[in-house]
Image 1 (cartoon, rainbow, N blue to C red):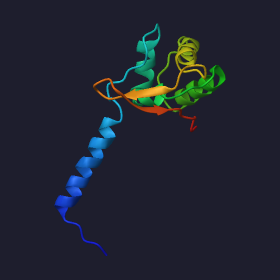
Image 2: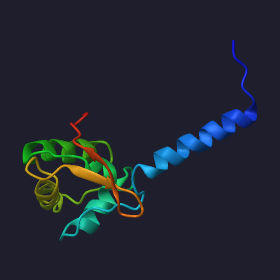
Image 3: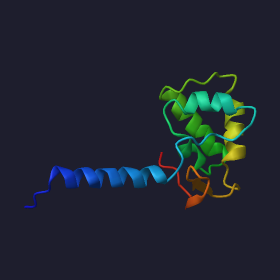
Length: 118
């Protein structure tokens, strides 16, 4: 059995957090558009923007995601539902380029093509 000092564990934790924090900017936002504000209000209360920015789903999949999130408590005005689905489909559809995370400096650090996990 190994015994590590508190100092070694602290340094390891700080390094791990620094690496995780450098992976992408916590200030990422959804793209500009007529529904950006409403999408941000509905989604970014629970999720970082990155979880949405990484998606590449067609309209049927966005429809299922929207309905699932509303069922789980996302606050979406029923009159905005279809416009939000169109916003997500247009900005995060399968024909859009892969998401590229950026550091705070703006330098690309990672390409990601994520598949839906729900």
